[in-house]
Image 1 (cartoon, rainbow, N blue to C red):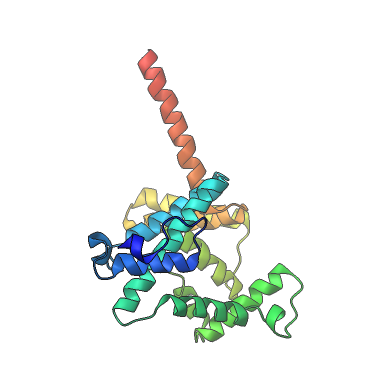
Image 2 (image 1 turned 90 degrees about the horizontal axis):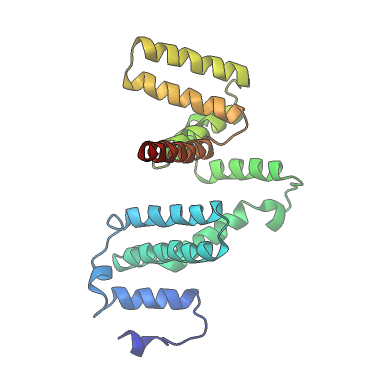
Length: 238
């Protein structure tokens, strides 16, 4: 079927070829596995592909990044096709929506708004985003941070938006002191709420030290594994 519907020996395939291949895989006489997938059934695949792309960025592996970005793009096309077949949006609506969003949120490029620095661009972006999403309160901006984000990243974004909304900004020393107090409370009475507060305060302290919490914890995990390996080797040699 694929041989008859698409050139399987092209020198270079483009985005429209990808969409056509997905049409074939999800169409009549298509692939049994592809045909039975739903948004929920491939949800974890999407997350996995994004993290693999991020790992390629972290390792500065350009060849791997090219491959992983292709896998991410496949997931986008896959979800769009599932939606289209159920009477929802198609891939052209996805591209139309993001193009319109970029035009609206870059008035300094496509309009007459002035923005000479990256900071001004981000401020304009945040204000336009709030307006287009109908967010009328500062709390709505905090609640709009996705709950599906890893908790460290969500805490970081919530704290950052709260500070921009006028929440009191701590110094690094004040944040560390708040962390120490929450740890002391945890020692006295350990429960889920206090555990969460320790982590939340730790995120704030790390942020004010000028480091990304997610990155810091990743480094700590790698260091732990390295130290674990050393202890394991020492145990084998003793």
